[in-house]
Image (cartoon, rainbow, N blue to C red; front, side, top):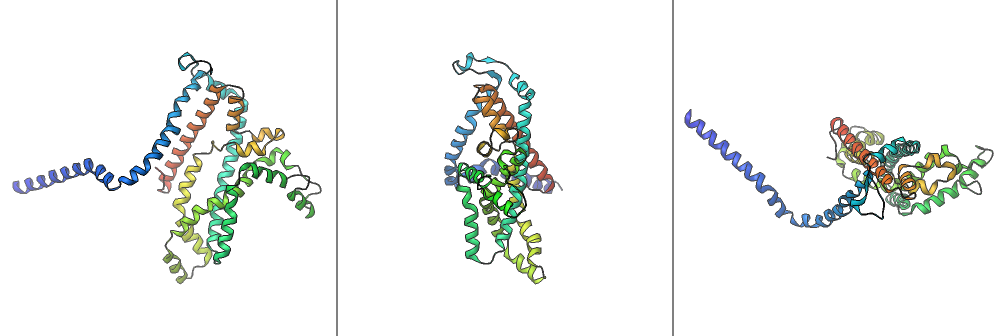
Length: 326
C-alpha cells in the first residue's frame, strides 16, 4: 500500500507540475504559433486605445464648471451638480422617451425584417434573380442620410409626393396629409426609413449564417416529408440563432445611443417634441449653449446606461439560451 501510495502521489505531483508548466508557457507557445495574427491586431489595439480610452479623461469635465479659457487645474469642481440639473430637466425626460421609443421600434423591426428577408431570399432558386434582389436591397446602405432624408421628405410631401398621390388615387384619403408636420407620425417615419436603408445590408450577415448550416439536414428533412416552411422553421431559424442573439445583444447595448442624423435631418420645428433624442439634446443644451460640462454629463449617462443594458442582456441570454458575447 505504501509503494502504491507513493507512486500515485508522484504521478499527481508530476501531473500538477506539467499543468503549471502548461499554464506558464502556454501563452508564449500560442504567441509564437500565431505571432503574425497578434502583430496584425496591434494597429487596431493602438487605435482603440487612442480613440476610445484616452479621451475618457474628458469625463472629468462633467464634475466641473468647465471654462475653455482656464487650464485643467483652474477649473471649478462642482461634484454632481451637472447630473442633478440633468435629472431635474423635463426636456431630458422628453428626449429620453423619444430615444427609447425609436430605439425599441428600430430594434424590433430592424431585426424582424432582415431575418425574414434573409430566409425568403435563401429560398429563391433563381441565382440571377436572387443576386439582383440582394444587390438592389443593400445599395441604400451606401446612400448618405442627407440624400435619404431628401427622398423621404419628397415622397411624403403634399405637393407631388408619391405616397399622398397613391393614397388619394386609391380613395384611402380625401386630401393629402402633411406627414412631416405630424408628430405622431415621426417615430414611424424614422423607423421605416431606417429599415429601408439598412435591411439589405443587415441581411448579408444572416445569409452568411444560413450558408453555414449543414445541407444534409435539409436533405434528411425532405426524406422525412418536411416542406419548405417546416425546413425554415426547424432548420434555418435554429441555425441562425447564435448570430441573431449576438447581434440582438449588441443592439440592446446601443438602445440609448442611436445617433442623431436621422432625427436631425427628418425633424423640424413642428415635431420637436417627438424628434429630439439624447444626442440632439446634448448638442443643443451642451455645445450650442457652451455648457460643455452639461453635455459631458449627458454623454456619461448614455455610456453608463449602454453598459448596464449590454451586461444585463448578455446575462439574461447566457442563462436562458446559453448564448452570449462574453
